[in-house]
Length: 79
Image (cartoon, rainbow, N blue to C red; front, side, top):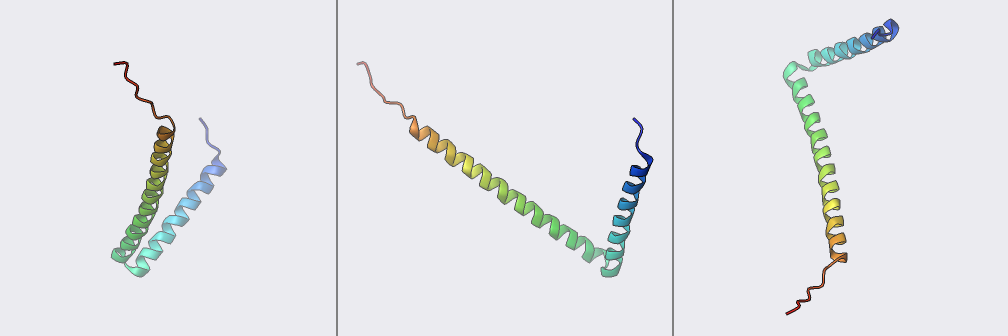
């Protein structure tokens, strides 16, 4: 599968620019602080995704309870 050389070149340039910008940021603030900021931001993203998934699961559970409440079986014994 042949890649378009122009597209590959642009992709490489964008990655290289991002890497240079990240390295400049980390150099200016220090590696420890920079990695701490990256870790804190990733924790915030993870927390947002976790809370979103918890909300979705709660809604599914409530919907299931409501649907089961509508179809209660009557218990009549033949004894």
